[in-house]
Length: 140
Image 1 (cartoon, rainbow, N blue to C red):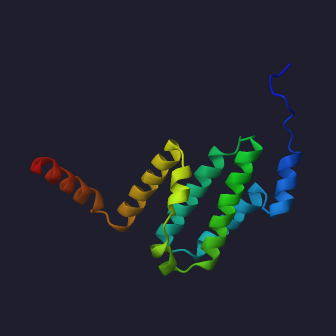
Image 2: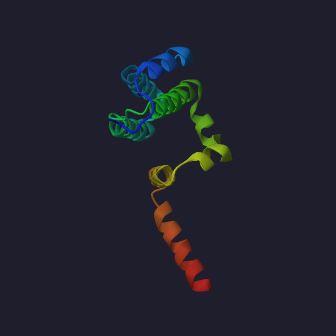
Image 3: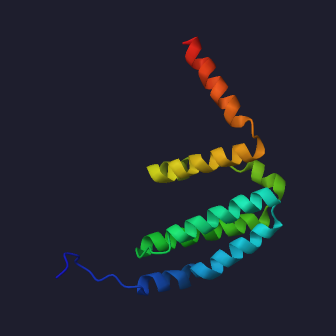
């Protein structure tokens, strides 16, 4: 017998999906990839790769809260991509509340994504950052 005092079923997930009008994972995934078609080629490649990776990593999640959270955030992203122009992306920032809620793994993943995008738009960015770090270290 399990130590869990309640039975976990998929009913709460199905009800929550109906209440919030979230798309199911596969249609959401397809909509996101289709929405990336409007992006410049380099952004599309980066976005498609990231989305595919995230959906693969979360494919086996069975925790209803995590599923709802995952689908909700990706649906917000889909709406953001659909309604924003190329210039809107440049002014978007994460708010402090959201950043504080991120786990260490999520922060590391976000940092990796930031590095990838900087290298994509400024191939010399990494070299500049290393040079600046060396300069700071020597000046101490």
